Length: 297
Image 1: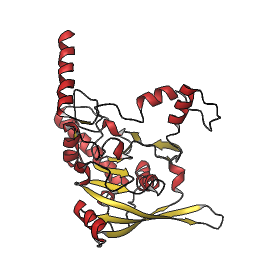
Image 2: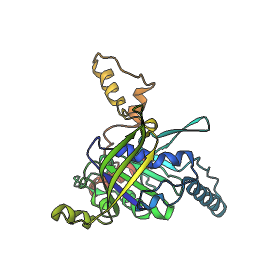
Image 3: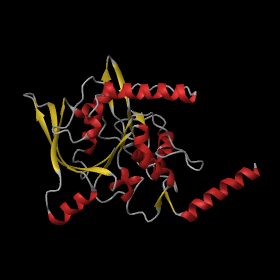
Image 4: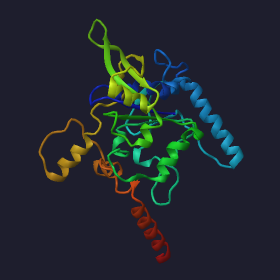
């Protein structure tokens, strides 16, 4: 299933994403559900979900004669989540948003293991509803067929109307209404609770926005511990370091990252041209260029 979580910047989107998925990095034996069980992707424990992924890969290898490796967890995210388990630091698998889709000769896509949970943060970068171009077939087909691979896709953005209609019309839409920390006697965070409004269909959200009618169900999600220990709220500063290197700005950075040049080239802040939403004419041109290159070679 697909979910669309939205809230203004700084209101708890990345923290909620981390809180929901961090137990899946540890393959915990119990599920951390929302209070009323409205978020169905959490109905299986992390341990159960990983077993589902491994069983599916065993079946695929047997039927298709493949030899795919098995993942150590099921979390795919375009921003970093990490945890400590049995003395090891475990990170999510990196899946940039512009690499989502089915196979296409023109543009590279990544294939997540079956039964993965994909966290697609700042989804509007790749799927803006304000772009007049149509959604690329490889992406629209991926969104239509993702359940055939056992995937759940969690989209995160800042406003309820900013994403492409192909996504909004097929999601559970979740408004992050508030985030509240609970502190111990020493002033450290011991738990965090998010209050959520869940709209089952886009028309429910539109009617709520137009009339104020309660067309949603409310629930809460609580994470025990300090969620900020599991993600870097400063992620993205690499792009400013890159700017400083190119333009000669003189300031001291808190952390020096190795291979900043390679990092920014591999993960550009602005997505490459024609990677996702293209006009039919642009796609025909790209296909013609590819055919010409084949003939010339």
